[in-house]
Image (cartoon, rainbow, N blue to C red):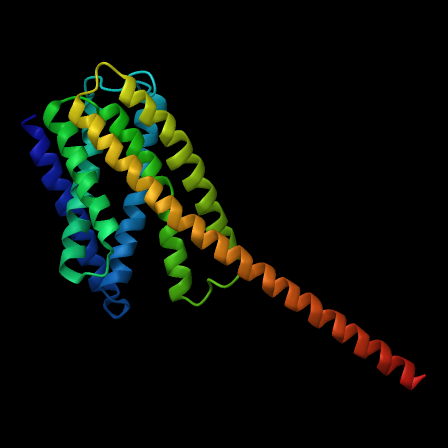
Length: 247
């Protein structure tokens, strides 16, 4: 446990240092651009790290919820906690995040702190982080595409579709199974079960917003497709009339 604060401090310093470096390299891009680059880097790194912890190192979170933390699980949580402390500080400094997102940050920090302080439940906490961060690179890609003017394209539609499918399938679907296992596990403490309720509830709040977005965008794309189809019919009709007149 003595090494945990040092690991968290090193993680916080590392993510903060990366942000400062990016601001030096691309000062004209602005703070949010560079912060999202840090977020994208963390998303890829923590998904890779927690995937190894879950699928290779073990134990399996669906059967060992509430078990004692392993050294690799602890290190993964320290890396993630350092990032969340950096990102929460950035959000407070520059603003722009919704109350729900700030609540998600606070719940994530509290959950990781509890797992580290109690020395247990890092197993399912790493699984929650994996599921939560799996869609994060897609979310950042969507933002970068918007800033670069390439969002309204087939690539933008593909990113949105993959994001919705992964969010619904992993965070809500598989997350629901993990949530049930955590609630029914005799090893998991009551406070960690309460944290699971908060995190899964937030996932459903995001899911409702995402479903609304998906419905609106699919309806818009369908309407655009109908208009293009109508225009192509008109163009073909005019072309046929012109051909007949020339004959």
